[in-house]
Length: 195
Image (spheres, rainbow, N blue to C red):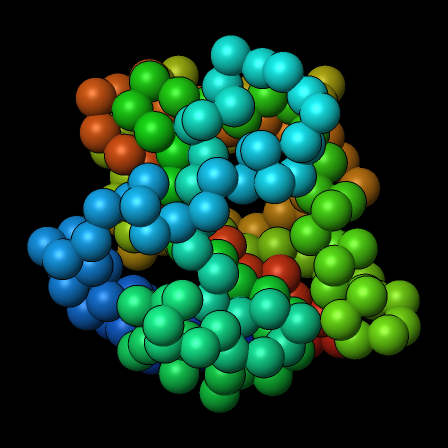
């Protein structure tokens, strides 16, 4: 289920501080690192016993885990991480990579929210924010995301901020282009929303 991203209390900070930091880190990262050598294969981590044609399509680099910054040796995105640490209520953040002609099948984000709760030691509620870093198409039929029972896929462009509830609602993502789809995903505390 989509959420109005402008209802996030720190929406302006995302625009003025985090997005420039993501751009800076991405420009450095793309010149120096290989995605599949630096990142984690998230699908195989989340669903180790599930066979799927898209099992190698989803890669990520963690920036914040359980509210704490991931050390620089595992995280070359230090400007973005510093910006995220200044924003209240950020539980977790990753840079998400979807391979060319890849996708994620319909899924919930239970695993990531469960790890947040385990790290913090108490139950939490919240919403997920996604920011386009290098989105290869603005056509939702080519590079998009949709929720179960939603007949209108949506896309978001570079520097665009969207929000959703992926914990409670099944969703899928696809990238039918010849380029990587890159976004920053941030799991946030519900108390930081004006909803």
